[in-house]
Length: 111
Image (tube, rainbow, N blue to C red; front, top):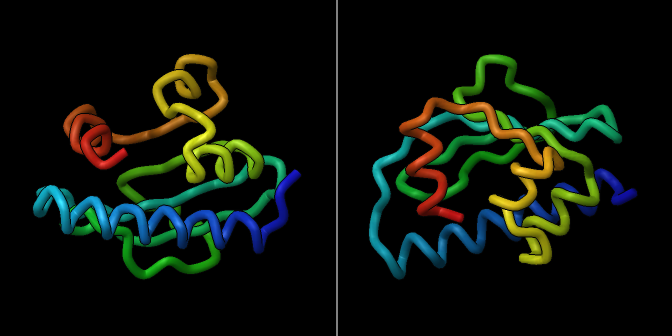
């Protein structure tokens, strides 16, 4: 099981990757709140996706977040390090993403 600090760093790494992707591919029209809930650690993080970038990461849940990623700590770390394919993980129910269908299409472009 990954620690809370490892998960926090994994999300920072993801934010850095999204920044590089946004610079290379241009702005993506997506402005939504995000919650990342870790079931095995019983903890959460939240932030905001804007212009294809992940901003304002902080500890704690946002129950009103428009996008929610629900997974385990190990799967979050594997996902952010490119060791776990998001589509396969969702199909295998290792990761759950709660979002509108339109947001899911835009998220797919980011990941």
